[in-house]
Image (cartoon, rainbow, N blue to C red; front, side, top):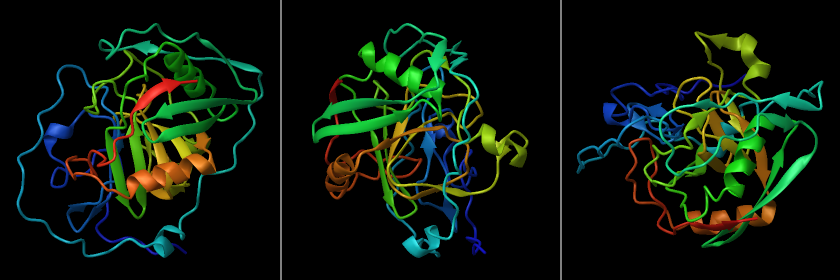
Length: 288
């Protein structure tokens, strides 16, 4: 039986006492308040319209969390469920236009294959990061990512946020503006594991906590269902989340080692969602 984590709120938008209202509308993994302290599991990407929100005022004091999350604690939680096979070779994806794109792109084709994997190499400032994207898990997410990559949407962008707390370890990438609010000008519905666990929903969002395993590639959203866009997460350590986030691939072991080495330099603690800009930049120079 999993020991409950006291005073901790996961994902969706964290309580007003934890996250400033200036963060509303940004995309990412939000979450994890321990005794009123944000630990930074916020996978929120910013598909909000308009200008990026101003950063909150700087503070000069901090409070240590009353409950430190350990690897042993994280290990108590179930991981992503087994993937249920899709019963069709193709699916029709729905990409809904939203605010203007951070970069001009065309909407992906609406027909997507559910068969096999796609290998994508991100040439970055720290070396090549290889991803294996799974069409059988999330065909529309893979279709969108590949389309955006082929159009050069990700080239020249940086992973603008790093979270390195135990239980919340990932890079957030895919926003040409570098603010966490930029998107491709369209959204699309949630995929694996969200529909699989839909019977557990309460008011439209899942409430149980699972571990997104180290090596997962997941889509950022704006804190509401079906708001997936261009931003994505490279999960470098088992991360506790509500299963609201589409998981569409994995990072190879060699590439995880590169990300680990870069993450060891830490971040500037600048994000109201937790974490901050990486001290060792991870900039995508090409996608192949």
